[in-house]
Image 1: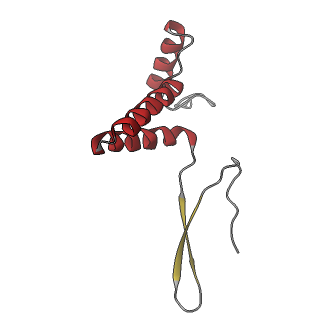
Image 2: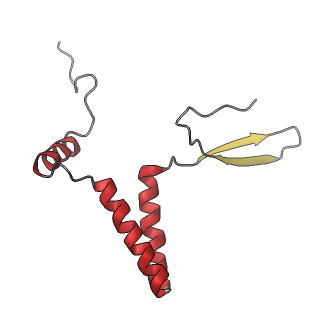
Length: 103
């Protein structure tokens, strides 16, 4: 019996890959992440100019969406000792290296 499934190395989201390829063919100079950066900056400038709460919330929301593409997500690590105290630590790696395990 032959193996089923996707070929090794292929993405697991063929529709997303197809959309990316078509977008690159039709708009070769378009980068959605850079467009998101431009929009985020414009929203932030508007919020600073108006000082309105709704504009400030929009600036925070757009920055949060942008961070998904630019910053690694925090990972929770729990440590417990002999006295049953549990400490939760949030770590962020900016170097792109695997996290260092504590002893």
